[in-house]
Length: 561
DNA sequence: CACATTGGCGCC
DNA sequence: AGGGCGCCAATGTG
Image (cartoon, rainbow, N blue to C red; front, side, top):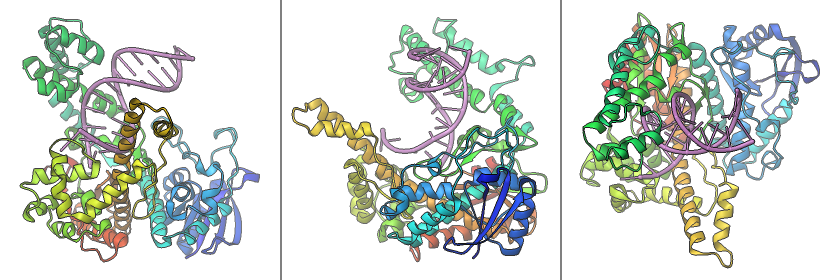
């Protein structure tokens, strides 16, 4: 495969430099193109050679290409790959890992958001940041390729870097295409739950009424229910003895006033987080365009910035409506994390339980636990590090049934407690605990340390152990999801009518598809899940089951799962 | 005044 | 219970 490097010429700002290179990054030829002809030049090269584009930052380069109608097939995102390689235990001895922090460790370039100026391929002389260090694209690529080649697991790292980079392409493409969103449907849902929105602005009728009723019932008509401190005092003055205003505590307490207050909180949350203001800010032209941040979470999961795309509440998912004649194909990887754990640990008994479309039911059928609910709570406890309650009590049974899987998460927890790094299946390593953590732990072992120090250190160790325990599973699941999505993207290109990805949520994908090929898109989702499992784990016995549904809205699909 | 933190809660 | 996030309003701080 050929490489094409795309970057600014630092000496002549505003000019695009395209450079062909071999697979080891050695330069072959170089051409400069005026920035305004960048998209055209990229398109020509994409058509002629279908190269793997190497550039500093997909979030910086790709949106403008998409806006110009240009899509690229493959890329290598130097910024994202740098972050992975710098931290990875698989290439800890590389020159890249040893280098001091530099421009490649900087956060991604600022992204366009609603109201912000439209992205350009290269920032104009005046518009961009005042000073920008020139980036050595060729040099960085060499360092990265060397780090991979000399690593303990080049094949895995190559897959991880390709998946991460493809994820960045997909993120930009999904923002460009947008999730179909009906303002009318959203408004209808809000009105149904919250009541009519007053014409002159202000809070809807049902919310206001609830607020009044709660305050009157408490005998404090001016109480601000939105201030947790005020509310806590107000509740206690009215004889409701709670230690916080958290919903679960209120629910445990019970009582008619509490019921109403909980309803108020539910409605208030919907109104403030995903009400009309959200709709006006984040939806335009019938599309919601989340700003995804690939690799935004240390575990490799994506984050989003603005609009809360990863927290769209179930209540408003009915507003994600396919265009006329189109469908939304919604796929959800069933119990992804335990399946990933079964595959990465090579636990055959757990893999067998996972032959069942419902893995938790598989646990029940294998006689490990009494019911599905127990299976779920036990497994979550194993992956999150439960120390008390039902979940912790079930651990010995899980350990007996699935010794290798449990040993793997336990080992990750112990490593974290010692302050060591843990690594996902493909090679993303956890960060080291903070300096504060290390000081706390060190303080407990010096001469004259008291029981207070020991307790604080023990608690800090356990906290970090829970983090590393979860990291290997959450991180590997994120890798599976990236591979799933990348495989799907390629498969969708072979289906006529341009079905395309419109939403990604950790273990869930939405495809917007012409109605006539929606079944093909659904099959592509299933085939891609199988492919992802093979890519990561080879011939594993673990099945990665999906639930797939074709419907008009996001909510329809979820209802049938 | 702007910015950072906290409590709470939505999602996986 | 237990891991990971982002966003809101209220509140605290410079």
